Length: 180
Image 1 (tube, one colour):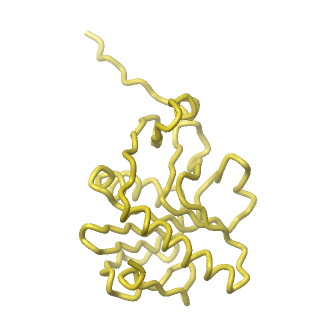
Image 2 (cartoon, one colour; image 1 turned 120 degrees about the vertical axis):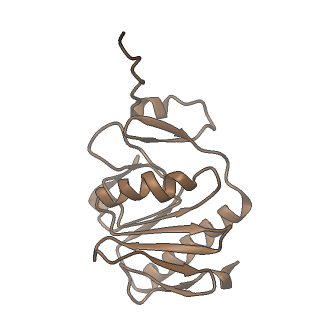
């Protein structure tokens, strides 16, 4: 007896979702997203503002985009993600639809419904796609996991009370507790 095959979804299926419904697509599988909580949105806003102000003050070329912002991570139609914050330094990756290829820096804010994705599936996908830096911000535990993929350094765990150094911006330091 043949096994039933799972449907493989594409980016067309993401664009066909009803208005207001958000999902991500990883390797042809759809992952629906619940509405974010207030702390999630506050963290996204604060971090996006800090990073954006830093880039502006340094007259940098990178651009910061908060979710919802489309990232077409692979060169196929089976992976589409909306990181909470994307920092893109290569403007050739950008067009009106979003980012084509790996952002330089991605930040995900963990919620109970995304924990498995952020610490597992996305960690693997972002590293494989050559994202240079990945932060996982966990508001319930008040910790930040920092991955410096560009320099192959081990993961570093920080508390919200720590001053967290950036990886792609070595002189950028962020204290999250002071921003909440």
